[in-house]
Every structure is written in structure tokens, then in C-alpha cells.
Length: 432
Ligand code: CAO
Image 1 (cartoon, rainbow, N blue to C red):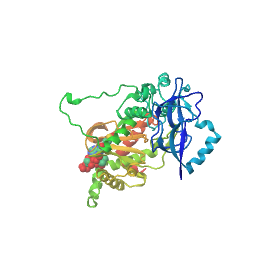
Image 2 (cartoon, rainbow, N blue to C red):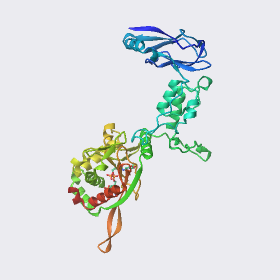
Image 3 (tube, rainbow, N blue to C red):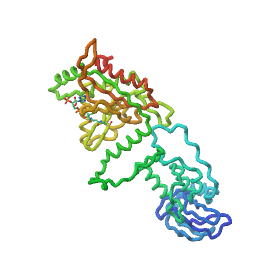
């Protein structure tokens, strides 16, 4: 059963008639022990009054601008028995825990940032490094300062909307939200993108991005900014592969089987990942360790009317060429019918982005982190290749491998594409 309890102004030292400048809770809020209830400010100091109990706020008994002293009623609160019991122990044993928190305590400087940013964590939201002097001078309560520290927000840059321009939690949230959603490039220390009214230059139409566009955009942006990319270009002579592919499709045409170049590329990637296991790894969250994977799941970028999705074909090392070709068809149909589940798109070791059916000679795909490499494939073309003293027409497939340079060295990048080129040029090698 819930007890209604009066929460009074505790012992605040020699202060009398101190002004209430901020009320941090509302009726109905569920709060924990030590959550700040109100902020008081005298001529000399500002302080927060923490809750001595956990429970639900029932009524606020003060207003901003009221003057209060020790023993005055601040709020009433429903404290359930189960919640109240441990709290009673805490306050009895550690009375100072429920004491007011002065806002004028000099702040310790923030711990220095780690030399190396942890890999694959969202980048810090602070638009610029925190200016400590500005942070200290800013007008905000201790809990708001703590909140700003947690989010890496620079109080010195925030305009307060509270009484006497005091910075409130809401101001920090709005500041951080703006930094995250405005496409701000402030975190990189460069000027933010200007907001432009394009209608001043001619007719325009505004179309909302699809959900997939937005999600993909966030991942691509994060990966572009946090992964140091290098793209290695190469070519593979797939003249013989193409003959074999056509022969296979002819043999299986009555079964409705269609083998594309992509299925061969997956087979070639399986061999290359076995030969160069570092390409089948991810940095762990600390950025200090490499997690090497013993399975081979390959993501395939599929272009759909709603945007780009990357279904993952599992255990490619245990599947035949025909099985891979069939799974590719199933995955791309599922993708275009919007039937992919999050599980269908997770667990990839490396991705393939094939634009070969469309065109182009080369491109620089963005690594699908935490994977460390992605293979881009452009359109195969007949080219004159100098062979045995003469130029001969060969079908040449362009490869563009982007990789995370923190994990893969340039030499290994070149070895990996050379290996791919070799096995694609002579498919017998896929059997090795
Ligand atoms: N060179 C020449 N021709 C190619 C080729 C290549 N590299 N790749 C495919 N083709 C041919 C195919 O053989 C097929 O021709 P036929 O009908 O005569 O056999 C035709 O192009 C169309 O192929 P496809 O695109 O239907 O099949 P696929 O297996 O090659 O690709 C899929 C499947 C799902 C990957 C593809 O349809 C797709 O969506 N690609 C776009 C991926 C994308 O948007 N990537 C960008 C991501 S951002 O990095």
C-alpha cells in the first residue's frame, strides 16, 4: 500500500527565505532516491534539494519565486512500502546522501578523452570540444551540469530558457538533438551546412525520405565518418567464368535456376576470406581487439524502390554455387517485397555491392561496419588484353574493394583483390 509523505526543505545551513528557482518534477513523475526535486538560490549559493525517498510525486507545494526555509513543505509523494523500506535504511546510515547539493562547488575538470575513440560506438554528440571555462561559468544546477557532462554537451554554448536564463535539462536535450539531427558537421570541427530556401532559385518539390533511406543514411554517415576507408581497384578476367556460367544456366534452365556473376563472386569471397582471415573480422567495442569469425555470412546490397537493404546469406562456405544462386534470388525477392526481418540483415562478415547489372567502371563503396571490408563490382566489359605477345578480347570484371584501414593494411588489400582476380579468372581454383 502507498504512503503519502510530505517532503520538507532539509537542513540547508544558515539560509532562510531562499528562492525556489527551478522545479524539476511534476505530479505523476516516478522518481528515485536522490533525484533532484527543486533548486533553491540565495545571494551566495544555489542548491538542489534531492528526494529522500523513491515513489510517485503527488503534489507540488511550491512555485517558482517562492521563498522557503528549513521545514517548509516542498512536495507530497506516494511512497510504496516496498520502495520506502530500503530507502529508510540508506538515509539512516548515510544521512548526507539526502542533503542538498550545492551548485557552487568548484567542478573537477572532465576526465581527459581516451586517446583512441572506441570503434563502432556512436560518435560523441558534443558539437565541439567542451570549453571548461565556459562550462564552469554557465548558469545551471548540479544535476543539469552532470547531465551535460554525460552527453558531452558544452554548457557554455547553450542558452538557458529557465528563470534568469538558467539552463534546464530541456535546453541540453534540444541542443544535443539539434546537433544530431541538423546534419550538423560541427562534431568534425567544420561549419554546419547552411539552411537554404531553394525556391528562391526556381520551382521545387519536397519529398520525405523513406524509413529505409533514413536508416541507411544514418549507418552510411556513421561508417563514412568513423571508418578510415581505402578503396583498392582491380580487374578479373572472367571470360572462362562467363562461358561456364552460360553453360550452367543452359543445363539448369528447365529447373528455373539462374546463376549470375554474383554467385561466383560469393564463392570467390569464401576462398579469399579463408586465405585472408583478417578480412573476416570486426574490431570489438573497445577498439583494442580484433574478433575473428569462424563462420562466413555474406551481405548482398539490394536496390529496392524504397532504398538500399543488405540481406545476409548465411554459411556461404557450406553451400554450393547453385544453392548460393537460389538464395540470392530468394533474398532479392524478399527485399523487394519488403519481407526482410532484422535477423535476415544481421550477422554479415563482409558485403558485396554489385552494380554490374546497371553499369559503371568503378566506385568506392562504404564499408558496412562493423564489417571491415566491402567488395564493389562494376559492369564486365570486353577489353583487349595483351596475352602471349598479342592483344586478345577478354571479358574483364572491375572490382572495387573498400576496407577499414585500422584493420587491413594496403598490402593486404592488394593481395586480397589479386587473389579474387586469380580465382575468378580460373574457377578451378575455387575447388582448392
Ligand atoms: N557485369 C556484367 N553484367 C552483369 C554483371 C556484371 N558485373 N552483374 C550482373 N550482370 C548482368 C546479369 O548477368 C544479368 O544479365 P542476364 O539477365 O543476361 O543474365 C543482368 O546484369 C541483371 O543482373 P541482376 O542485377 O538481376 O542480378 P545480380 O545477381 O547481378 O544482382 C542484385 C542481384 C540484387 C545484387 C542486384 O539486382 C542489385 O540490386 N544491385 C544493386 C546493388 C546496389 O544498389 N548497390 C549499391 C549499394 S551502395 O554501395
